[in-house]
Image 1: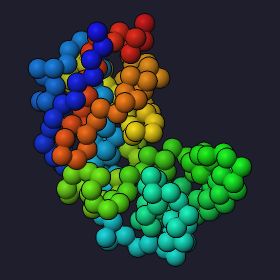
Image 2: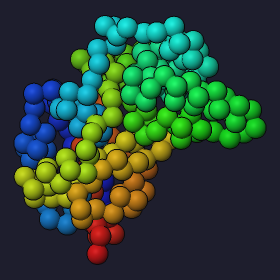
Image 3: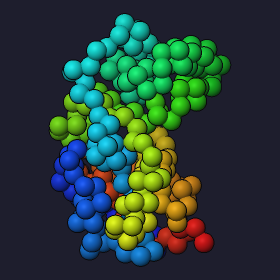
Image 4: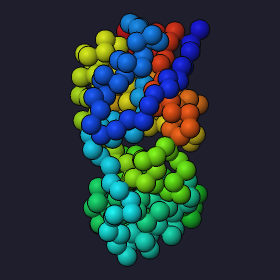
Length: 216
C-alpha cells in the first residue's frame, strides 16, 4: 500500500546542512526503495535564495502590475511581483502580464507563467505573514537553483532517492530529483499536497510502497 508520510522538523535556517537535516529526521522512516520528497522552500533557504520583504525596493511597475493578479498568486503582492521582475527581467514580466491579461479574457489561464518561466512560477511571497512559519513569513522565497544536482548530492549522503517539490492545492510539480526518480509519478502521488509549511512543520514527505515512483 502506498503511504505518504509527512515528517515533522524544526525550523530550517540558511546555515543548515540540508542532507544532514534530512538524514536526522528520516532515519527511522525512510529506506531503500522509498522516495524522500522535500518542499522547495527548504532547498531555497539553504541556497540563500531568500529576500527580506520589508527591505525590498519595490518599483512602481511592480506595484501597478500586482493589482491585476489574483490573491492565490505570489505576484499578488508588490514584493512578489518585484521578485518576478528581478528574476525574469522587466520586459518579460510586462509582456507576460499584458499577454496573460488578454488571454484570460477568452478563458485561457497561465500565460503569464508560460512567458516568465518556472523561476517566477515557483516564487513564494511573504503575503499576509500566515502562509509559512517565522521567520520565513517575512521573506520572499525564490526558486532554488541546480535542483537535479542538489537532489543527487543529497541522495549520495542520505542513501535514499530525493525529489524537490513545488506543491500547492492547485498543482504538484517535481522541480528536481535524483536520477532514479520518476518525476511525473512523484508529482502525481503528491497532488494532495501532504506538506505543511506552518504549524504542521512537515516540509518533508516520505513516499513508501510506490515502486512506480522509481525508474525501472
